[in-house]
Length: 78
Ligand SMILES: [Zn+2]
Image (cartoon, rainbow, N blue to C red):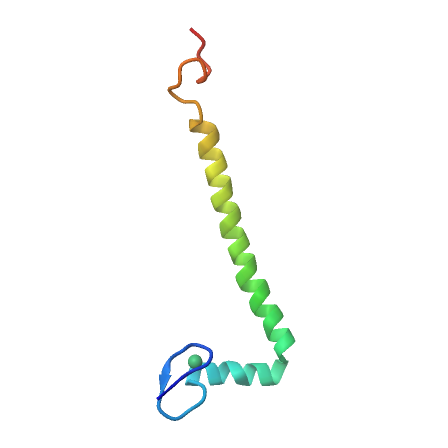
């Protein structure tokens, strides 16, 4: 048995599994640079959006709750 070098699916005879063979065909048609650019821009852009959303949520929550309930720091001076 062999492992597909791209996705590690177990195979009996082929070097690539069917899914990765299709990907290889796409690379053959468009070239590795174009496919790599498309994949990178799609997936990394999505990751950046997710990271930015998480950062914004943390910032918003921390500003709202930073000094809540702490005497003298929660905006109420007594
Ligand atoms: Zn595969």
